[in-house]
Amino acid sequence: MNATRVLQGRMLTTAGWMDGELQLGDDGRIAAISGRLAAAGDAERYILPGFIDLHVHGGGGVDIMEAGRAAQHVASTHARFGTTSLLATTMTAPREALETVLTALGDASRSRQPGSARILGVHLEGPYINKGKLGAQPDNAVEAAMAEINHYRSLAPISLVTLAPEVAGHMEVIRELSRQGVRVQLGHTLGSYEDGVTALENGASGFTHLFNAMTGLHHREPGMVGAALAHAEYAELIPDLLHVHPGAIRAAMRAIPRLFCVTDSTAAAGMPDGQYKLGSQTVTKCLGGVRLADGTLAGSTLTMDQALRNLVEIGVPLASASNRLSLYPADYLGVHDRGRLEEGAWADIVVMDSNLQLQRVFLEGECLELVNA
Image (tube, rainbow, N blue to C red; front, top):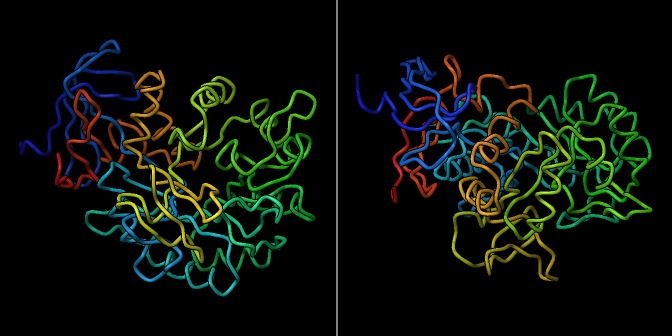
């Protein structure tokens, strides 16, 4: 069998760590896994599930809101860093702009381009957020209406919606979106602990970039962060070590069983320092971060392979770090044939050396050539 169709090394399978080999089928799925169970520890080569990023605004100098073929460019950029599937994420914008980008994303999500990550759907981040907690979002926030959301859903497969639960009418919207099978995350919110708990009771399922752009934890006013830490099964977090302190990351991991990680990446990801677009705004990449002119953090330059290394650097075991980048986001979306190494799953795979540097990426069985590997 062709060597590129058989991978050998320390594999993180659904049964645990295994030393052996994985065979890729001609249908783009994993044909077989064989070997013996292994204890966690150092290895010369790690074979892990491909990364799944549920919050991606851009990459390679291109912003999702540019529409056209922007999403394909972003998906191919992030594939080079081990992301094998993603949710294209929009910015708060006027209705006409959202219609334009969602039409383009509807087209982009119908098929995977060679060398690109699979676009699983859309993360609609805004416009249904609190005007008082915009963060780096433009000031185009509006109250949610199901007629408008259903119109947007007719243009593209919206898998996830971020909204502020305290805004008038949003609890009813949360209930209806949950009934329709759309994940709802709480974010860009001035809501209280009680608002967060009520939203979870009404069908909200997660929190957007936990700790950032939401009411913080205080021992007499637990805020939205407190609701997440006390009650959430899932939440997303940006582990670039700029948005959230390592101690807060570790605290969140202890409190939220299936905390998963995202990049919240912008057009600046994979690019040199300089100015880039984030929706309708200009942001500057410097000193490893992306900021608005007033210094506000505006997304990130993070890639998922660096996210893995950051987690391991702060003491997270490799298997746990991998799960938070692959298995948990897949399960959160209800996608059970990605984010895991098991027979019959899509052959979305990353191969890394002992230093967790990428060697190869497989996208539904397609081997991506990495220039620097």
